[in-house]
Amino acid sequence: MQALKYSRQRESIKNFLAGRKDHPTADIVYTELRKSYPNISLGTVYRNLALLTDLGDIQKVSAGDGVDRYDADTSLHNHFICKRCKAVMDLEMEDISYIKDIASKDFKGEIDNYSVNFYGLCPSCKRDLTNE
View 1: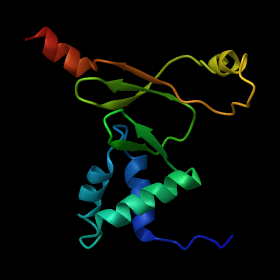
View 2 (view 1 turned 90 degrees about the vertical axis):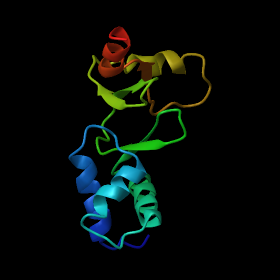
View 3 (view 1 turned 60 degrees about the horizontal axis):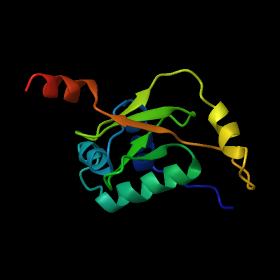
View 4 (view 1 turned 60 degrees about the vertical axis):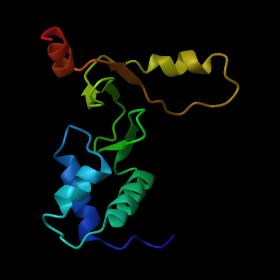
């Protein structure tokens, strides 16, 4: 396989995501990168996000609303997705890797990874609803 050519734009996307905890969309990445690269296209951002995901440098998080978010933290961790505002947050919690064993118990294939999302109201939306 041919070595991947260095790209300042791709590196900027990785650096932008590495400094974030809010799991931005491609549109947010595009809007922010245009400040440094005014000629960058949305297509370039999408292609680089897809490539970085394929390479395992970032991960794509689907919030169930058709809009993917991106996370530079590729370690195994869980997410919380707000049903109201669609915010995606890392969920700090104890290790639940035993669920892979539970899922594998009666499954004839091989499970080598898993992803868990939790859904509900984020603190901000919960507070807003309480104050209404």
